[in-house]
Image (cartoon, rainbow, N blue to C red):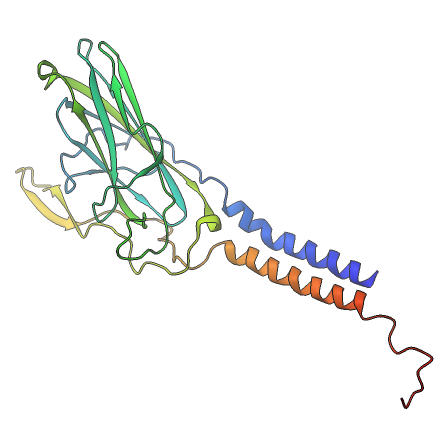
Length: 266
């Protein structure tokens, strides 16, 4: 009975300790779009428009343009990028593609989703989705694993008739993330997030010149340190349960002690 009470108390304490960890692994809430949402897209990596997760950014362009946005993603997040292209009233069959690059401008593979889709003749819209792999805290230099930092979105048409080139289109993009937590945690951490050191911005003077400034990207609560995750909590739970199982097994198998029929000095 004493062993049973000890096991019950230990499991209750471990359950209370694991509560915050389980809550941390729930999907992170998305920020609501507001009046500050971007209404234009960049034309290159250096001029990519910054978008926060949860914002719905819009832009106008022409078929044949390259539209660029950028967003931050931290350790343990699994970003989902969605894009909707509003096509002109009259057009032929055309294929649109959504690509995502990391801070080193390496193209990241989509875990699932319709990354490329063909719009039939006369279709009003085409929708694209790319669910990235979970962002890791550390990776080998030769690997292309997603790491914390800035990610770039590129939206463009890859196949269309020559007569449709240059027609006006509208685009909407949105980035949301699910917090995976310790289920995807790895040992090690990245010294610095992969964010651009400089970005091109228009000068405030109104002369249209470009000036190099520090990237404004950052996180209000700071970037993840990379070493702590709820995996440590569950590892501790397993160690305590293993120790309790060993104690219980010893108590059950050691027997009643020294047999009464054995002489004391034997």
